[in-house]
Image 1 (tube, rainbow, N blue to C red):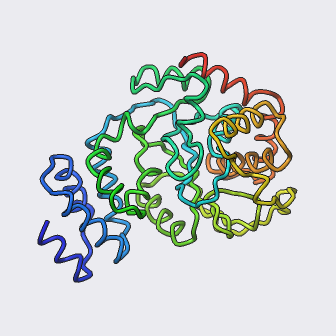
Image 2 (image 1 turned 180 degrees about the horizontal axis):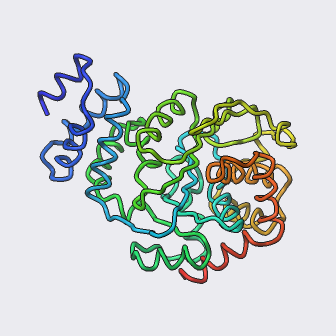
Length: 331
């Protein structure tokens, strides 16, 4: 580690294999917490490279519990988090809208880190018991087009850096890894980032992983399509800035998509969206993100057609039916 830190201080870059080995060594407890902290801060100061991030990802997946969802090709819909906006569970709602539209969704998520409610919080609040059983995860996918992988059951390496990350008290490269370590290694991903710098980083990462992807970022700092401003979408074959009006949707005020002050409030908003009783702003934000995910899977379709599919899924009750079936299977 001493040699690695010396190289990083001098501005050198590590290879993908080198950072993977460092992650493996961390899980074998070869380094002190002080050395791990120094490593993370050195990467923070210089800025992590694509290969360095991929190496850490490779190490987490290698030391974690794998999931095989073949023969299905699945999509994960996820934001990087940490945008400080405390919106409601938009990406989680979108997962069920996309599932209701007939597509296979395999979400990877966790409890909230910087907001009132994360994906695991809102799903668990309905009585769901999380599982790492591959057969159960596959059965969920087959019966309701959705399956959920609670991160703490899969990414075992994270516990070895947890105390250090908590002590540092600022975001590190490990905050960037959440969207990249889905244990089923989805073939498609719709990813939200809070900044255009993060968008560029993930774009290069997704290209190297040779996956179908879309990355969305609202220009006012939301890690999703918030409809509070124009937003950018970049993918395998698209790079464009859209306005809400381009989708036939109204601009939303930030307070209209606030996630509430308590977990109970967050759950109430989540339920109202899937029950199609939410406000227009809450509903439209979910539909816009769902449309982006469908566009990821079907790049030959127009954004408008994808939005229409999402709207039909929600208004017909198919999205709610997918969620209810998932809860029934896992309670």
